[in-house]
Amino acid sequence: MCRALYCAVATDNALLHYGPSAIRPIHLISACILIRTERGRMEELAKKLRQIPEIKRAFPVLGRYDIVADVEAANGKQLARAVTKTMRLAWIVFTETLPEVEE
Picture 1 (cartoon, rainbow, N blue to C red):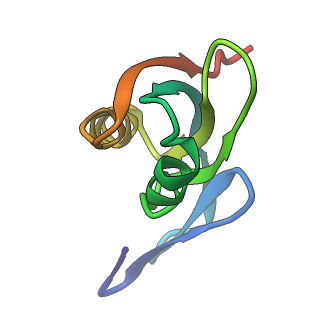
Picture 2: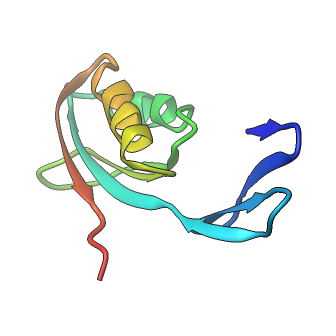
């Protein structure tokens, strides 16, 4: 997201905003999305999930859920959009989102 004299650069767990004033880190909101898929679709769905920019990792797991997706977003609205995109994909039975709690 670059505009005129303003630019945001993603780092490990923060966005650094460059602008006329100064550099200030903005911490990202992290969450895990636990996903149950239709039978036999977890590999294919994990690949589709990795195409969503906010999803940093998506991998199949054993147990109650089939896939865990790690999400990072600049704010709550962006996180909600990423979760909504995820829920609309084919082959998802249901999801549970676990947002990070700040200390």
